[in-house]
Length: 195
Image (cartoon, rainbow, N blue to C red; front, side, top):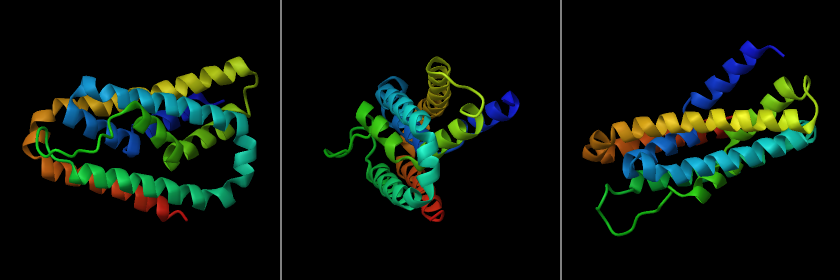
């Protein structure tokens, strides 16, 4: 396996904006870094589950993918649009009684199962880089944990960014929420354009 190509693909895919990173930054800017950790741990757990399923069923899913892809894209886009709506209408700290909490372990974990970027990333990584060169459960499990950790580290980087700029984000919460929501809408629209 070409480790340079593998690591480049893994790091670039994990660090670029996507639903995980945008939500991580948004949660950290609203709640602070420490209180955003449940969401990030949920992302980590969900990522391990999705990556494990991709490793187990990669060849089957890879053959079925053309017929499954539009369905998954629609479900993923709908969930991401819902996240965009909740980010957009969220009030700053202390304002309003009713706030939707997207900063939970379950929210982070659930996002992985409808996040087409993660699903395609897992399938591509397994079918292109890992499974053709490595066999055996311990080795595949090590790759699953490594890839999940890289994704987790990248969401934490985005959370740190959100927490560092929390004061700025609080002061300009409406424009910041609008930008975050628009980025999530962009993710959803780009997914739908693939249909």
